[in-house]
Amino acid sequence: MNGTHRAHLSAITVAALSASSAVAGTATVSDGFEAVGRMEYTNERAHLGSTSLKSDPASDARKRGAANTFFTGVADGEVSLWFYDDMGGCSNNVSKSQVAFIQTGAGGASTAMLGVITNNSPCNYSRRVGTTYATTNIARSLGWHEYRFAWSGSSLTLSIDGQVAFNGGYPFLPDSISYGDVWAETVWTGIGAGWYDDVSIRLTTP
Ligand SMILES: [Ca+2]
Image 1: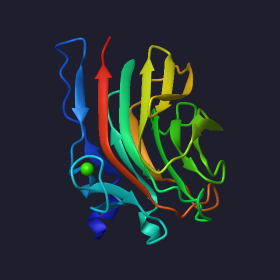
Image 2 (image 1 turned 135 degrees about the horizontal axis):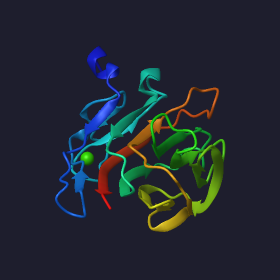
Image 3 (image 1 turned 60 degrees about the vertical axis):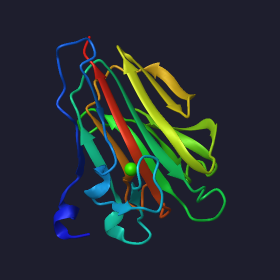
Image 4 (image 1 turned 180 degrees about the horizontal axis):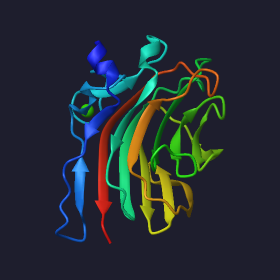
């Protein structure tokens, strides 16, 4: 990981969107998106192609951080990405805080998050909507899982592998997706790794 890569937080450039139809565009992030950012390009495993992006704070503190992708804030959209869960922190004592979230600007009230936060819940997936953290009723399991963030009008649905993790009001136009181990150790402690791959962003202009 060289200095140039560490200076970059934007991992993905979303393709230009067409305004010519009701569906403004679909940006699919294909294999190869992983090559930039503070996280690690790895061929240990992949959901799409042969590589994924690994967040591995235990191996190198510089790998604590998130990859961010920015897009146009519109009223309807959906972001999907895949997270590999090695069950760390549930099956052993290696704490993990590996999450993905959409938000508007710097977030806060608009932050909507799914992930593994073992200090919140060791064996279920956690969520955050606004500034409130909660434990979902979705049990963690080994392997790849799809996190889906879908917003329409003023509502939001979060799901994991098609199971609803949240459905409720959301009066925001998110404009980024971020993923990784994003907190300092004093917030949500965790050193366990996470793998991210196969990010899709669909934006619809009413
Ligand atoms: Ca890949």
